[in-house]
View 1 (cartoon, helix red, strand yellow):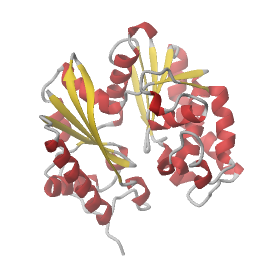
View 2 (spheres, one colour; view 1 turned 135 degrees about the horizontal axis):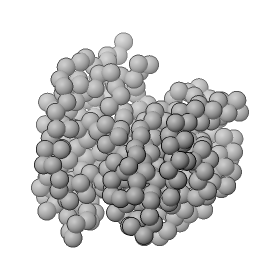
View 3 (spheres, rainbow, N blue to C red; view 1 turned 60 degrees about the vertical axis):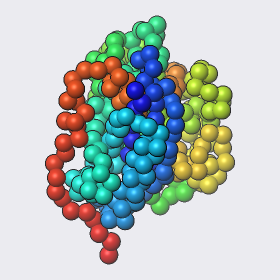
View 4 (tube, rainbow, N blue to C red; view 1 turned 90 degrees about the vertical axis):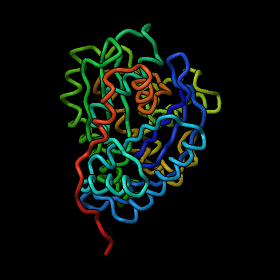
Length: 327
């Protein structure tokens, strides 16, 4: 069976085509369109008509690509950039009518659960209890568990893109006081989750998402061209130095650093602050970077079965709501 997963995120619309072989999603093709939807949000977090039109075009193109690659079933979803938008219902309706696609809006806790599943399958049982960290553009997911499914999971509004807009909107590079204020904010948001995980004991700490991948590369991990099976780790001591380095550079200067892409250079500092504060709050000295994340979790959930209505139910979003307009 050939499956596709369509991920509408803060920065990109990402189609991943995989064959389900031996219970695992084996990658066949990737198709990405960079929309940077998070950068187009208005002051209330709404997506305007221009952004939604671009999103409809990108989803239509992804569906056409999926058909060309013989995808039998396409699972599409949107994350925090749409989930948190006041006009999300209108956005989903526009995609439904304009692109013929039903997008699920994954609750943050569901994102954490599915990402945990992917990380557990990749890391295996040998690591014992596991704590998952996933820093996205709009949210941070944290999960802890001893099995395939987390015993504890949380979603917090600590995405790298969101915090960049809220704290460094007009600062490039940011003022020193701004970085300290962001660190205090993140520490406060993490207080309850950190207390729970310190009580549980974090076990093996695993980080997913492009944020952790890029920070690990910045701190000396192997480049992506070495493939997914090379062990990559991120030490808290190295990350602390990376935060200081990133804080002194403009976004264009950061883009010249190892691992930091131009598209994510502006939000790389906020992502580093979240990662370092997270590790410090949890008492974690080192994170293992896992190449599987939410997309693989969605595919694994489909391959491994379960309630057959779980995905259609997620796609049944309410209709209505108005799009934001320009002018």
